[in-house]
Image (cartoon, rainbow, N blue to C red):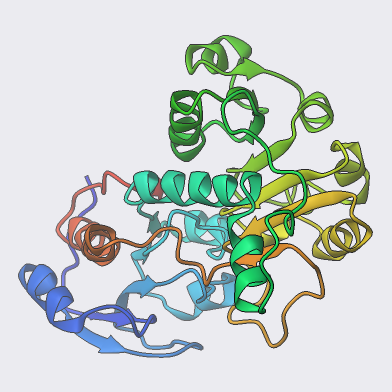
Length: 316
């Protein structure tokens, strides 16, 4: 058990989207002050940080806060938090790993269908004043299409389930999930290069780590069949965006749909045709918007009251 904090402290809210009234209600038993603050944070009495994915917590931040006991992020990903620094200091790190699985899977499949059936390109064609049913090129029948799912975690499995229900053939690749476990999802297990070369559409569902940064670069994109589609609702830096733009401009890829970009909001949009972009909205629904803020607050409360959060990714 984690011993409770002997004195009240402060919990800093570093994402303006957090609803303060809700946080104060949840954290009232911990007897802490809740304040909005921007990095760099400081203070000998700061016991918790509530952050979003756009608010990195690095080693200097952790070392600057001697009383810090917990960092909770309102996101599935936690690559913006220095986990090694937190572990070295005995600071708990928690995320919300499963709050938006259904929404992420549904958004991914919606993007996939939009590419296969040319929905967005055809819509843009009509609004431009044309009326050309071939404006999106040769459209694909969804049933029987082969899609490759990279990453067989919660979201990848949910995408697989939906794709199979639509009659699609699913291949899947994941370096930490065995072939037997992948087979149990109904997908065919494949190595990454094999999947890329065989599938007319690919979706990404892996975390961003040093080993997955630019997982799909120029070489990998060139392995994909001519006219193939790519969907990314995970992390932008899984893909070399320069190589992607080249592949789209050359026609090597038939289209791509991204819910994530390296800079959000972007100062400028990628110069690439047939690229569908949404504003990091794949996670969103009324239900998830409540959960994404409530559960990190509950994780902070757990730590301050001496319990281990169920969503902890780093524990003392």
